[in-house]
Length: 504
Image (cartoon, rainbow, N blue to C red; front, side, top):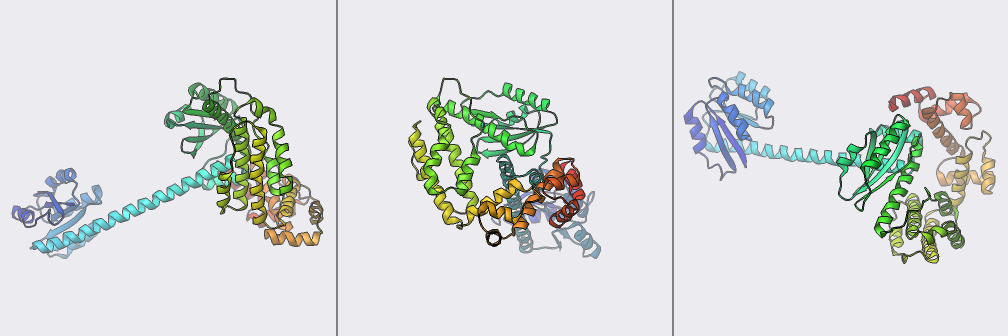
């Protein structure tokens, strides 16, 4: 119910308003009254009424003066002026103050109720609008947070070149530039994140990877500063069943953040598994990263006939670890499964049915090499079949050509003929095939790869334009500059200068 407060120097008027309406029945609360503005102000501040009804002409502080004060101090409060003066200047001033209603005495109870109900509806409408705006702001903030966390996770996964990472970070308001970095991953079931943040003395960016797991990308000006931070973290945080920690090594480049993340993830995973299984033996040294490229290449180009052999060879190097370390099989399978899921999402993000198929694959926990291989074979059979159905028959050829270009873009002699030879197709047919499958000519794709690499070098090195041109495959620096401006809209100098502004 809305609260009403009355200000009028005539006691008869105040009592008349107070007594002529059954306030509770009509949906209001009569919270008080006063004979002038000066006495009214402290009472209004105390009772916080929704609507103030005030006379204009009063001693000490009149209605217009108290209205001006209320507009500044309590802008949400609605003001209704009652006046015995039908004079234009009063009404004009009331409009300037943004009074909600201006009416002349005498006023019947029904007329006053009509005005109060109208103003009450206005209050309800404004409240709904405020809630809607707050909800939209909350959704916008949530969207920004999700975009920010998604970017930081992709950065940790190594999905960005240096230049594209800097550009994306700038758009999200993240200062990514530093001399050195390392990644800290902390899983804390009891959620002591505030105290943990106070332990980290260096500058950092953080995001939640899952409910109780936080990732910190910690930045520093000097390597010794970060080494000191790592020592401080290790001394202050003792891993336990409810708190697992992983710390990656210090890196010098943005693209190496993903390496530090992998190291931190492996270290944290190692702790989680050993505390979960209650192993008492010393923890053996784990490799920093399994060879993802080998599996990723097979996912792109392998066929069903080769799956069994591939899985046997893939697991062969880990046989000793599977036998000696009880949880090693879990580690191998999680990494293997995650890599295949990443591949599936890349080729067809909309298809969630295949992930359901993954869950249906049974694997009996243990260290039996045959069981591990059987699981991998079944998983790859699903993925390769899905890939072949999702992609055209030319997909492996196109991917092979793209990989070759990415590894040889720096060669100024790189040509359609050379790429066609790699995939063993005639140049004219391959040119048509590449355009049909990618929507770009081979030359356009090669130019895009070269210019993206040039952008990265411009932002991360002090090399001259002609040196960068040579490094990305252009013997003619003038031609390179023209192509750069055509694709980016900037000269190399302007792009580099803008990059520096963004960095600092």
